[in-house]
Length: 550
Image 1 (cartoon, rainbow, N blue to C red):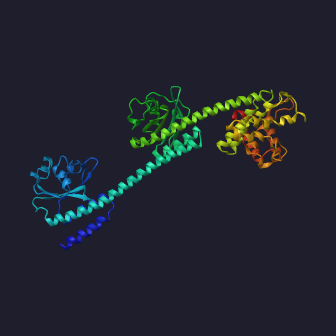
Image 2 (cartoon, rainbow, N blue to C red):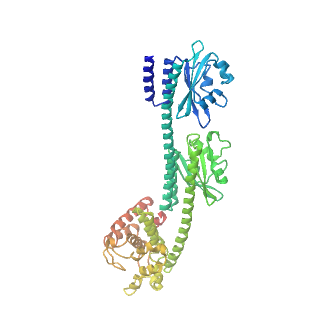
Image 3 (cartoon, rainbow, N blue to C red):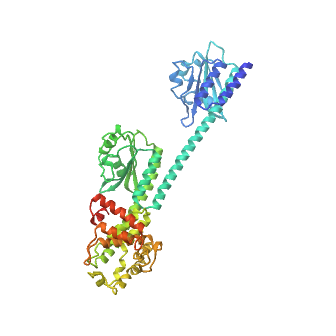
């Protein structure tokens, strides 16, 4: 017996050091077969959600027992033995299973020649499983000593398995929590994109990148409602070539289209495997040919209206699980609001610019020589600002400054504007007042507050000889220095009664000659690079190629 207890202690210590449930079962089986001479062992774990015992893990089972013990879950409601063991949390020994009313007829027949011992795996009064073992009836039943050894080993194994299950559950909870945090952070990223930019392109780019990151999907497209159908606004594929019908700008074929179903019903729609799709439409067949197997379409809802569809695809069938769909729907909801806000902003911005453009054009139209001048200065100024890598906000201010730089000429005598010759010394002072008059006109408009310095100082020179304040160098706002280059350049390349129009090369030479005295040399350098790049692509030296590029 001393040797038995030594093996029992060593076996318990070995069980404690294991980290895999199957290894625990295997080692427990080996110990029991050695210490108490069992013929076979089957271990069941209790599934609390299903309220039954999952199919067994076993060793030594005869082939005829396998279908029952390894493949069929055992329901306590149907087997009194299991029900009793769950209630009493005590072991049960059946010396004559063939006549026991605790078993179903099928089990009685199967176990009739055996002596069966059932031991619950109990941890903190909770049954987490059960261990079944058997001997042939030719051998004596399990003795009290053997039963005690079995109970001790099963109890120890239950504790080890419970720790593993708790660890796995904790890990699953941690992963689930991490996933939920990831969703919150993703929505926060989209919110940041909304608050930091009202650019639809930026919002779509951010949202698609985050959806790809969370789902791991390989295809994302954003579709917009247009003319009673759907049009591709943006699409991205990872490691796949985007089919032509799903590239930006393409109208979507609606026949048999999952995206159209989502758009029409206002509910998410998906296909687990495109290969099994019935009545597959053009889009489905195209995606399948590109390697996409699973598809999910989520409506983009704003103010209870479907504004578009978020379409996701993956090369694996059944990729989009229910929980994941819920997550993407939340992101899609944020996207829809963001895109609608961006659209409304763009509509208001377009209305504002059109109004301002009409005013600028009215000023330009006062002279037959300056028609379109303000819009051209706006385009050149915007191009320079972008070349210099300025922020969206700065580019927007410079764009407005370029468009409105001459608005003060509304207070200048028309005869001076229409004069087909250079102004005299006496005529020039009234013209010099137009930057200040422009600021006076626009000051009541709060939205243009940051644009006013561009308008006021666009005739200042780096050497201090400009007007109205004779500022020098970096004291002149960057936006004003940019508009100064654009304004002078357009004057150079425009035809006037008193001078011919410069070619692009001649105008650039003139700008470089004035760099450091009249113009900011850095601004001139960036503009020169841009013009030369356009000239290189077009092969032309005339100003028209710049307006085409704009």
